[in-house]
Image (spheres, rainbow, N blue to C red):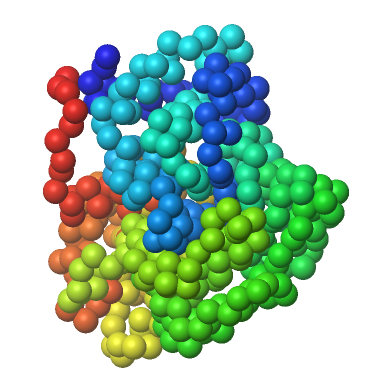
Length: 432
């Protein structure tokens, strides 16, 4: 069996097969494993933004209710093991090595598996081995042909729709919605997050065809904000006043409402939750790299917003921070992937920014600093291009006054690289 570093080398090398939209290979692999994903209950969560946060909230509330819960999300920030969790604990290095070795030994007559196909199978098998009661599964890309779309879920949540991954999903919101609607299944309740009427119509039509009961944010359930992190939830049957969020940002309250609606809709007689469990789960949930404050004086925020929808949510939060601290300046450390809409992203955020430092995450898909430089449209901006992410972050620290705010954003990969320097390293299983 390979060591953990060698196992990761093998797994990450599978990225050479790129994105393969289709279910034949993953279905074949899971059949060899006797379909472990059918041995426990599941909830399936898709959408453009907010999938991971919503999944973490659902998992936290169920876990607070006394259930044994699996959570599968992507991508990871620092360590691959973050993708697969049981009871809030990352899969161990030993289990990653053992499961990878086992899956490599299974015949694959349809061709080479992609990274996401193999890791999805790993998660499903691990959850069976760990005897979870229920697993919360986040869609990787799209929905219809995503490797996770082999479930028989109790319920489906689609958090919202924005422009992202257009090369795979389509060039407009309706086309993207049609791809993401592919996770809606016959007679399975579906919850829709905040979205426009013309986008919601795509899901409503698919739900009608599938005879799937549908609940929509703002119509069938809603929230009333009573503080920066406090709100009242009004759902189908229940009203929960004075709920407190452990995650920052108004959009996280919307995500929490979607998480509650999913639990309320998805055959809750199998997994009843007390008010205390709901309150405890929301109060204690954590989700790194999303409006995560890692330092004060100056304030440092890590946020993985990487598309216009995420940029708008980040804008709203940063604007509130300027309001709370007159005279504060914002220093933006930005790195993005090549395939993102850099111009639209920056158009949203730059009105708030005093200093922009562009950098380049260590990824083949990363945009160069020159690419980012070309879309900056403000001549009065203090601008720096520093290729190495950690050097860019350190320069931001040099420039910042105690009252200022440093925001690292544009890509979860960039956030992960900076986080590695801020968190002590852990030992690896085995040696190279």
